[in-house]
Image (cartoon, rainbow, N blue to C red; front, top):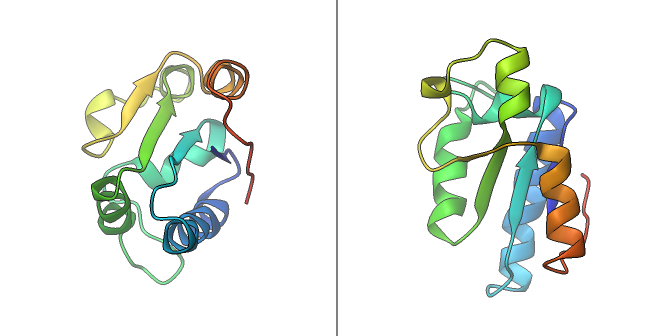
Length: 113
C-alpha cells in the first residue's frame, strides 16, 4: 500500500516505484491511498513537473491491477466535486482509516515514497 499525502512530487515517486515494483513482482497487489495534498495527481488535468498528465500512468497501472483510493473527507474539505476525480479511482470515506484497514485487516505493507 502506497501512502500519498504530500503532493505531486511524492505521487510521481510513488507511481515510478509502483511501476518498478510490478516489474520485479508482476503479481503484487498494489493499492495507492491518497489524502490531503496527495489527491492532486488523481484529479482531472493534473500534470507532473514535466507537464506530463498523470491520467496516462494511472490508467496504465490500473490496467495492471493497481488500485487507487482517494479520501472523501479531503474532497469535502477542499470543496472539490467528485466529478473532478479521474476515471477508475475509488473514493473511500477516510484515507487514514483506509490505510489502517489495509494494514490491520488485509495485511498490506506500508510504503511511503
